[in-house]
Structures are given as structure tokens and as C-alpha cells.
Length: 424
Image (cartoon, rainbow, N blue to C red):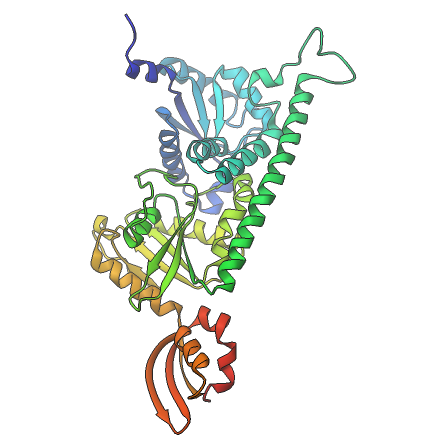
């Protein structure tokens, strides 16, 4: 009898025990290890893993050989055998030696948090740029750990073709990976060059850019879809969208801006991933306004907001004008009081979206200025209308007097010719 597809899928699925180590350093840092472990469960489920159970170990410092200590390894081995686990996933990053030792002691596939996140990104990457970035991050992660990941990689070859002047299979693997990393960096350099050209073109044309940033699953893609009718993938899961998407958003004044959705952030986002995705994440650096989208229903929203601010700091974008958008108010029992630079909304409320558009427009608008332009200079009058919203217009002798609520970006790019006609 032929097994059903469902049965086959279950057989192929990784069955995992999730492991977290809580050290004194983690306790002193104030990080919530329980939240991190729950997040690991969500990551594993997103990656298609069948999570069997979780376990936690408390130590002063990580064990250099087995990470969680020899006694805990024996306990993990017994639990894995009892539950029929095929994989152990650790909430912290492991060294190559620790992976090798754990594989030999447990006879399980050993995965750490970084490798799990990289695997999810590999599943999500659809564009050429995304695929290049993920592969580069994976190989950069793998290279220093090559002897620890996968027994087939750490075994030396024997027989014809494997002996020679120090040429083992492991060394061959390393050389191939280094060569591939070099090729990927060259491809990514070309991608970066094209992206920079697009940015320069947008800058010269005076396009106003707004970037959506936030913790993964905060609702950025939903917000982009509801604001712009963008055809983007929206799902209640971590890293539902990976590749950045830009769409035109019309503000209440009729002005059009570019709204860009970026990849979600997460606690302990792998360094190699941040480095590989820097070209994509730097879209935030070019933005005139950053919308920091927060899941207001999350009990860990304060910690998640701190993670986002830290990563923005790494990207040198922390000083960008920001509007904090507390999303998912429909899932909250109590109103979020976030201060003057924040707004509390539901992405599914048209009224809330209208208020958000107004807030975006308000923050992109500059100060109100009066200009006395020569009445015969139609080019300057047209330019003035392009640089903001004209609130008042009168003619006095041979002068056209305009009161304009300036748009910061437009005035900086196009308005230099108007400065000498500005009334003080």
C-alpha cells in the first residue's frame, strides 16, 4: 500500500527538541530567555520543524565542549530517544567544535539559532538579489564551522584522488566555499551598484521616500498592502516577506511618495545576515521618514522596539525622523500611550489609515514660508508650487506673494532657486 502524502511529509519533517542555555551574562543583560525560547519555537515551526519539547539549562558560562554540560547532554539524549527526535535546535550560536561534539554524543542533527534563521531566509528568498544575499550569509557562517557541521564534511577522504600535498576533502571544501564567497560578493557588488544608481536617480528626481521597519510579524506588509493596494504576501508568521517592496502612496494633499517595506528584524539577527543584506537594509538610510511598526499586542513589544533601534543604529539610520506606528490595536485590551511621535492604529481600519496618511504628510512637510516672486517669472512660480502646498497667493505691484507649506525633500532638491526670494 502506498503511503499518503501526509504520512510522507511527516516522515520527512525534522522532529526537534529545542534547547536554551541561560548564563549569568544573559541574566545580567536583562534579556528575557523565556521569550527568546518561545521565539525559537515560532522560528522552528516557520521552518517546517515538528517541535516535540523544549528544555532549559542554567550555567555560569557555556561549557566549552558540550555547551550545556555533559550531564545535560545525557538528559537530552534520553529525551530525544524517548520522543523519537531527529534534531536538536539550540537557542544560541554554537562553535564548530561544540556542534561536532554534540553530534557525536547525541547522534542527532545539531542546529543553532543562526543556522535556523538562515534556513528560513533561504526558503523565503525569491529574487536573484535575495538568493545571492542568503547564500553569501550561509557560506560566511559555514566556513569557520566547516569541521563541525555534518559528519560527511569533517571526515577525511581515503584512497585514490584524496592523497597529495595536504589536499584533504575538508581543505577542498574550504577552498570551494571561499571561491564561491568571492563570486557571490562580486555579484552582490553589482547589485549594490544598480541599487545605488536607482537611489541616485530617485534623489535627483526629488522622490520622497518612506521606509517601513519593525520586528518580524509586526504587520509591515499588511500595512503596505492596505495603504497602497500592493500585491504582497501577507501571513501570520515570522519573515513572511523577505525581499523589499516599494509602492506609490498618495497623501491627502495629492502628493505621491514611495513607501518601501523592509525585511523584519529579530533578536540576535545573525551578523552575517545583516552584512549580506546591508544593500537592502540601507534603503532605510535613504528614507526621508521611517515608520517603525510595532506589534502593540505583543507582551514583549518594549524589548522588540529596542532590538529595532539597535539594528537601525548599526545601519547608521537611528537619527532618521521616525513615527512609531503601534499596530494591531484591534488585538489590544488597553490603549497604548506612546507619546507625540507615535500613533495607535489597526491596519484594517480605513479611518486609522487616513489618520496615518495625514501624520506622514505632516512629518514630511517643512515650515511655512512666504516668497515674493517676480510676477513675470512663470518658471519660478511653477517651481514654488512644486516645492509644497500653496496656502495663500496675492499680487502686489510686480510681485507674486506666495505663502507655502514647504515639503522638506522637494525644497532641498529643487528650491535652491527660490531662496533669494524668501521673505525674512
